[in-house]
Image (cartoon, rainbow, N blue to C red; front, top):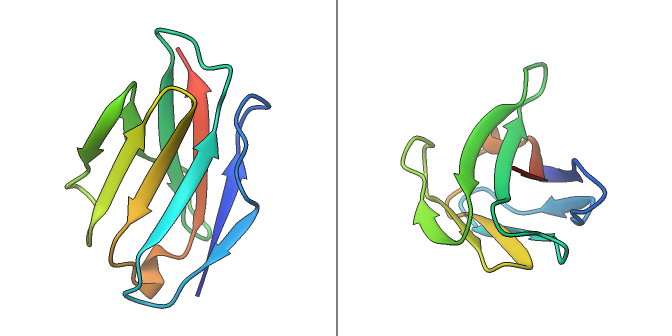
Length: 102
C-alpha cells in the first residue's frame, strides 16, 4: 500500500510519496533547516474521506506515540524530524503531514 506525505508550509520539505508493505516499517522525514527556538513540529495524518488528525507535537528529542495502533515514534533534531511507523497496516494508508509552527 502507499503512504502519501505532504509539506504544509514552505519551510518544511518532504518527499511526495512513500510506499511500504503491510507490517514493514517506514520512516517519514521532514527537513526544516530554518526552524527557530520555540517552534514545534506537528505530525498529522489524513485518512481517506476524513479530516486531518494530529498524531504528535515535538520540539526536540524523540518520543513514542502510544495512541496509535502499531508502533509510532517521532523525533526532531533541530533541522529535521521523522515519524517512524513501525508496523503499518492497510488502515494506516493516508496522507501524512509535517508542519512547523509556534
